[in-house]
Length: 148
Picture 1 (spheres, rainbow, N blue to C red):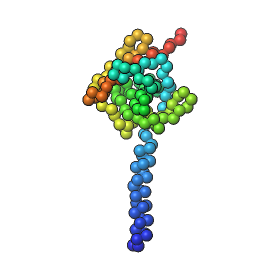
Picture 2: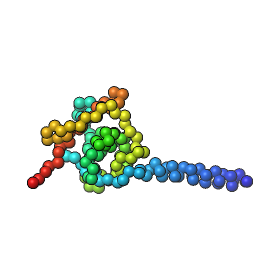
Picture 3: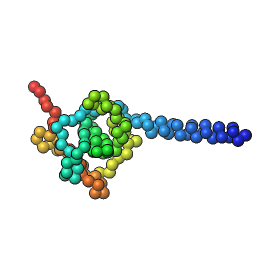
Picture 4: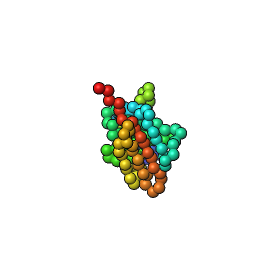
């Protein structure tokens, strides 16, 4: 085999191995969800307010929350009591809503120690203690308004 053919063969082999891996990393398996912003929510990190944060709730699954804290993004599964680290680029804005994946086994999990979720009257309070002393996040989400 000539050197030129050998180089072409090696490049083709590298592309064949790398391209599927890159495509798999970019394509998340979780189904696409519509995320609606939660207004009048309160958020603290280590019992202190944070300047830049947002929270969205999945339109079809009220147990899923998407939380932006400064440059960090998290997906919270209240039902499974899991906190996932997600990327901002996975979510696309559509007006005030976002569209992006729900929980997926390929998303990195953030280790947590304790979870507490309870009703505090007009809101649901969620407190999550991050493992190894990395802090505590606390969210107060207003209950949806029920009109009779």
